[in-house]
Image (cartoon, rainbow, N blue to C red; front, side, top):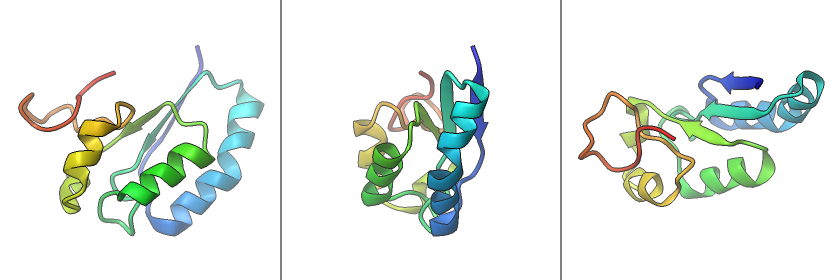
Length: 102
């Protein structure tokens, strides 16, 4: 199994680069599973619902990881509970919203 992990997609430029280059990377390397860190996808500060939808609809992403910046936007509390592909940081307590593994 070939896994591609892309760390820290930052802001609009990072999302644009992901749209442009991810399909080619996946095809050329026979990628089976794609994991992307999105904790800074909203201008370097967390992720929003529209950006999460954009990332998932425009890219073949299987798992989204996060870190402490996921909490920079209040709406992340709902997003991380509602979207099973979006993981909370694994080093946070189990009582924290979301799932720490998949």
